[in-house]
Each structure stands twice: as structure tokens, then as C-alpha cells.
Length: 331
Image (cartoon, rainbow, N blue to C red; front, top):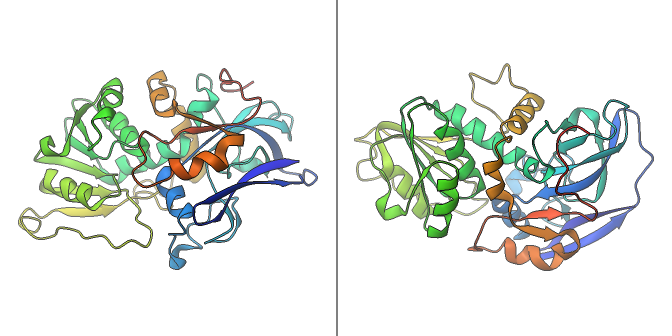
């Protein structure tokens, strides 16, 4: 038997129990240790705010149910392969699967977690893939002045990657001053919006707010690009394209992992991108992004508050019964 989290109706979360079918050839059976919550996306799912035009594109790879409700959603599961091909059994793997205690998935979707990456930290793989693609879309380079608006998990991962380019000046901006400590622990500067840097070579926007987008446009230097990572569902967004927007010849560039930057697209299939994202998680400083915990059994009670608009802190990680904090890399 397996237990899974379902978004049943607007604001309603339940756990359903389901029977596991016989394991089929070419699949592995995974006992989940941790799964990551994508706060921005899952907030829209729980609120029923995924637009009908995006119901097909927004389906998670192994989602069950249909939008708007009920739906079993999620895409950041890490667990141990209990049954499957001999070379994979016993390995700790990442999979794009909803929040579920046990599940079967095609072997091609079970990406081994590398040595030195704890299972909890590996839940950041999908977010790290998003951050990596954002850097590709921006074509950021050494010595660039870079601003990241929005100090959520994706914003902080983008800043972390950007800071590893030689000579870059990276500043994360957020209205929540408590995020400053996390930003500095990752080796980047922090500023509140009123002190955001100007004349930046590249700006990333990841706050999912109109005010954040306005700040991002203000930070951009002449002919600079603002890389937009926020997804607003069906909510209309006012974009301040007056003022000096045209005089400075700014560019607003969409970035999302479904279609990577053209220069990488022919050589970077999804499995390669996820493997690279997992390898980039070897830095223990990134544990600051996964400190919060929701026990799986508490999820129906706690998730609505965690996914509420304006909820403080980063999204916690769901921990499953029997999960070991020491689980890391290949067995």
C-alpha cells in the first residue's frame, strides 16, 4: 500500500491510500524519504488558480487526477529503490513524482543522487535545474553586476550559481529582511528593495509580485535583460513599461524548464539537466534552504498554511516515516 497527498478542493488537502500494482519491467519501486514543496506552483494548484489553458502543459510527469481538482501533484521526490534492476536497487534516487510514500516509476526517470548529497538536500534538484536554465537564458558572464529580486528557494539558488562566476557582484533583494542571513551564508549580498542596485548587467525576477517586477526593471542597466521566472497562474499582472523602459532598451525574457535556452537545447535532454542539477547540490551551505520540515502525516493540516499567500519562511520539506537524515548518494 502507498499513501499520497491530494489537493481535493480549493484549500483542502487530504491523504489517500492506494494499492501498489505489481512492478512492471523497466520500472523501479521507490520508498520515499523526502519530497520538496514548490511553494509558488503548489499554491496555485491548491487555490485552483491554474488556468484552463495551461491544464495540459502544467501536468506533472507522474501526476494523477486532473486540474482543477482533485489532483495528486508534486515533482521533487527523493527515496530509495526497493525493487527494480539490480544496478539500481538500494540506490538513493531523485524522481519527478508527486508527494507519495511509495511509488513506481520508469527507470529512466530515477536519477541517482551523487555521493555527498544528502537525500533532504537532493529535493532541491528541480529548483536547481530551474536556476541553471535561468543562468543559460541570461547569458550571464564573469564580472557582471547581477540582481536577483525575490529571495525564495529559486532566487537564492540563482544567486548562488551566479556568485560562482568569476568577479560577479550578486545582490539578492527581498522585502523580508530575515532572508539576509541566508543570502550571506551563500556568499551573496542582500538588500531591501529601496536599496536595490542600479545599472545591473542582468536581473532575475523570482518574487511573483508586481512590485518585484517593477523593482527588477528599475535595477536593469541600458540594454540589459530582466529574466522573468515568476508564474502568475491566471492572475493579470501590471508591467511598468513606461518611464525609461524604452529609452534604456530593456528586454523582458521568459525562462522556464520546459524549453531550455536555444544554445543548450540540442545537447541537454532532461535527464542530463537533472543529473547536473544534482551534482551542483554538493555544497553543504545549501542545507539552509531545506531546514523546515513537515512530517508526512501532518501534511493535510499544515500545507494550507504553508501555501497561503504571504506565508513566512521558505517552503519546508516533507519527511516520510522511516526517513534517515544521513541518507546520501549511492548505497
